[in-house]
Image: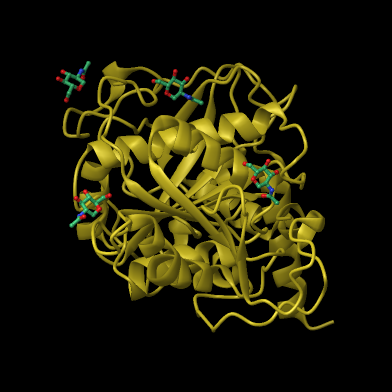
Length: 370
Ligand SMILES: *[C@@H]1O[C@H](CO)[C@@H](O)[C@H](O)[C@H]1NC(C)=O
Ligand SMILES: *[C@@H]1O[C@H](CO)[C@@H](O)[C@H](O)[C@H]1NC(C)=O
Ligand SMILES: *[C@@H]1O[C@H](CO)[C@@H](O)[C@H](O)[C@H]1NC(C)=O
Ligand SMILES: *[C@@H]1O[C@H](CO)[C@@H](O)[C@H](O)[C@H]1NC(C)=O
């Protein structure tokens, strides 16, 4: 075997071992940076969790899409939470799981089978789009999620404006996707693609959410607690950004948000902190990051979302450049920090060396991705 290959394989193995060492089980590690006193005052008023509940925004016009399909329980639960809060929201999603995609919006195609997923649109074969007759805010568009965004903004939303003229979509929300959305996956994720399309092609602020738990479920089944928790967190974060005011996010920047695994053994304490992260292997990128939390580099979302201490789990929020799909530039990171004011916490850093290797290893654990 070629010696270089041998070395490369050895490197990958080492990286995986390092990733395996990330404590995903509760540990009692008591890192110094878990209380406000250790924050630098220039850290823009970071605090613990989304605390200021008096900061409630007015109702917004929201478009919700996903890649798993319009009848997936997770998007329907999020829809209910948004609507119950009082937001004006429509769903515009593919009729089936449509992961292929990227950020192109090809025209809708005719439905070839007689059924959408979970038998959710009986007798609609041959149609390109459709909706729930009882609740016409629930729409399917037979194409990739990015088309759901385009078609939703241009064709569906105006129907709900009564006179067809007022108030555009304020924000495009995607997901929460079923399963984590991280590292190299961004390049071929319909979830990210839809948010990229909204930010880049339509100039609408967008957030892509994903929740680690992988279980698919039909819209008409009972929800499990994790679905409700993901939806509640996604609503709180959306509200916080809306409340912090326009333009919500800088142009051509989207947020990629990952919620951690939630079950009896993971994050059952329901104590979450929100951390600003980089979508890729931030440690090896030459890119300059905003210096917060005593580090010159943003931690990698992949590591952050797997981290769990005895009383805290972490939600990763990565500001992404819609053009490069890498981490947003320094100037945009500063604007994102303002948009997220009152939300972010510091992350208990490991040593730089350990951060680097765990992020490499974490990115390589592709079998965990779906
Ligand atoms: C919460 O937000 C309101 C409205 O902006 C502000 O008046 C209040 O001081 C904030 N409270 C805290 C604890 O930050
Ligand atoms: C359509 O909406 C009604 C009322 O909200 C609901 O009971 C029904 O399950 C929905 N069906 C689908 C496929 O969305
Ligand atoms: C159009 O609809 C909006 C929202 O329903 C309403 O505020 C506005 O007054 C309407 N305009 C006209 C001319 O009817
Ligand atoms: C969302 O915010 C509300 C109000 O501040 C809070 O009661 C709730 O626990 C939050 N949800 C989550 C999952 O943190």
